[in-house]
Image 1 (cartoon, rainbow, N blue to C red):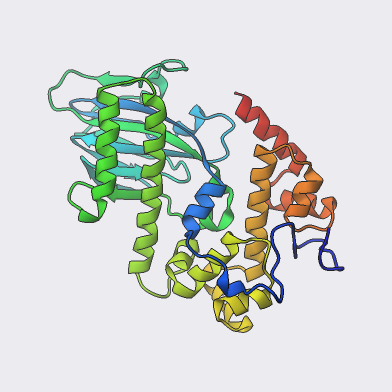
Image 2 (image 1 turned 90 degrees about the vertical axis):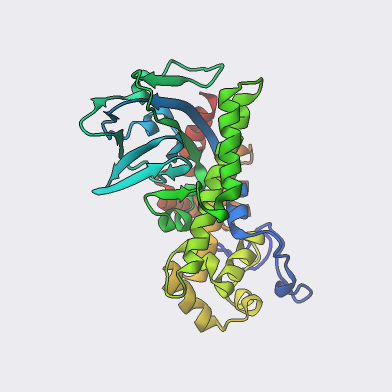
Amino acid sequence: MAGSPKHLIENPSGSNWPALGPERDAVSLPLDEDVLSNVLRSVRLTGSLQFCFMPSGDWQTDGVPRMAKLAPGAAQTIPFHILVEGRCWMKMEGRDYALEAGDVVAFPFASGHQLGAGREGRLVTPTLDLPPKPWRTLPVLRYGSDRVRVRLLCGYLQCDALSFRPLRDALPTLLHARTASSNESAWLRAAIAQIVNEVDAPRPGGLSILERLTEITFIELLRQQVANEADRGPGRRGWLAALADPQLGRCLALIHGNPGAWSVASLSTASGLSRSTLAERFETVLGVSPMRYVRDWRLALARVALGTTRKSIAAVAEEAGYGTEAAFNRAFTRAYGVPPAAWRQSARGTQAR
């Protein structure tokens, strides 16, 4: 690997990404791309599924987390519900929630939950009643003939971005947004209205449009979560809290904008923090050292490269900053539980389904 004569064995120090040098000022790196967009662009949402669920009268689901089973082989499956019409209740982790039209809920860890209306209603299991795929139009499941009905758009997203540990560790088990009466949710409310239009008046390409609208709805949920962290003030911990912190947010923007450029010294200079303060802030808010964070992001990008390109493992290892393929294999296996070759084979098998 070109660069420093001391090649990394276990931790990356350089790569084929542009390196900082005396002629390049780290502070001048562009910051016009925010970190959340960078992560979601680099480690994309990889698929989704939607169906319409329309029960009436008194009803309830059984709370068994079956949604993830609809996506065999998916690394991260995030079930969601958009309540389009009516009201219902939700039970999750011992808590009761009252949902109303315009509410969006998503479950980053596919947590089990129960939905229902009334008390002791009939049991419905929509995930078991879906027709076999492929679908030419969005499935609509109706239960009961009562005029008082509930209308939900349900489904899941496959989000490989959750393989990035700092993001995964920062997310709650439930993302919940109310759009009916919030001025801040006007854009999300409009997206939901467009989703309803696509469901009610199917047109060619509608399923693809629904996938994209569902993706941006999830991204908006994440943006609102970042804003909530900022509103809670200092003292918060986790990746979303770091994004909301001006100095740490700048550090993360620099790292994600040019992941191969950084040493502790150059990141300290670029962020305007001393090395000791930089290390302390990372440990306090993110629970890792600055260079551990850099390493985690490079490994996440390497995971993407293994799944989406034909680059050799040795080339991916070099780009990730590892001096030897063996060192990269050890680091990747510690991070993801399987060696790079096995992960690539599994990823290609999933994509072929």
